[in-house]
Image 1 (cartoon, rainbow, N blue to C red):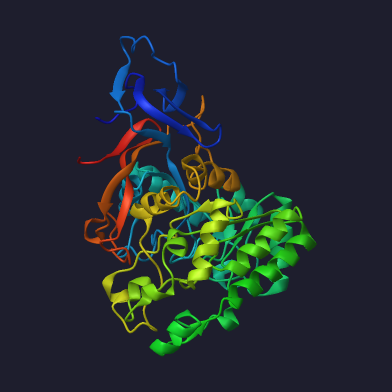
Image 2 (tube, one colour):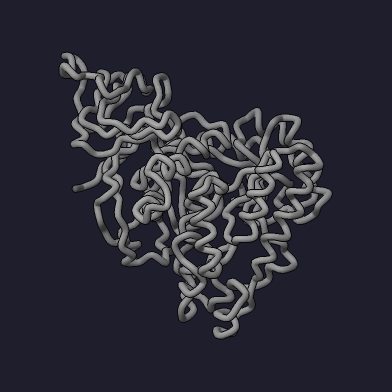
Length: 436
């Protein structure tokens, strides 16, 4: 497939298996793209052939779905461009079928003012790859004390408010943030970890003891979420718990949802794919924040995705160079480069019969779009032509050395997966096609 450009004729994607989690569409059919948007779609579209003047793209029976929306990405730009940039992350995201990503504000300088939000938007326009949105800091300089100008930042495009890798630890500050954000119907995204209990390198337990590493108890996550849920009940604010990793956390969120609180959450593929034993003999590529947990926690996270308690799956892309990772375990930076493995690792839940293909895709498309008020995430007339063509069955081995990301820090080296992105389209532009 060659790239569609502005001014190009309408494009017909034919012989596709159409998948739309929002409408529950799963049927063979076609999609017509015109002017960067979906002009029409359906099982009977072009049943009599593609009319003259419309470019024809044969999808070969593969799955055509909305492009993925990754709601938790560290871009490292500005400030740490040696680890990642908006351009390199854009290429990696396109290869992973991601058409929109939302950046954390923990850059240098911190994105806590209008200039920072506008910088990300401008760099994304210049890159002309995937769509890039950003969170703004919930507190100035991520210091956890003074609330940022939530209303003004939202007006200029901030999609939510978070202190990134830091928890908003002060209960009064969190209460004020939830109350202030509620005025503008904005969401507070929390890194749910009690800092006083999080001074460790991996999950607290037998494995940490055997390795002689300081542990972080599962209670660090549960305590923070329990406190925050009480503040949500007090304020009526919108709250999102990021990268939940423990059984206790998902149970608390499950009960909060049953009570009608405005609560959502996400997790990352490594929390339902790996457990604490992946640390092995001090493998720093398996060091993440929050840490990989027990096998019981891993199973609980997978079950919570399957039953809908966990709303979304995000890559939690945290690129690091070799210098940051090739350290003694306690000193190494936490995080995994995850853009290019988001889809295949998530598809494991489908291949294990834990949830259907549409439900798995919803966690990566329509649900994050709804949580953050983003366009896209759906196959519908008038929606942006942000599309992903993929083969859910194609087997391959993950090789971080081939990542398009600047950073290769992944614990999934030679990990077997099923499911590969074949092409990625943003606003009708083909920005990625597999070499095969």
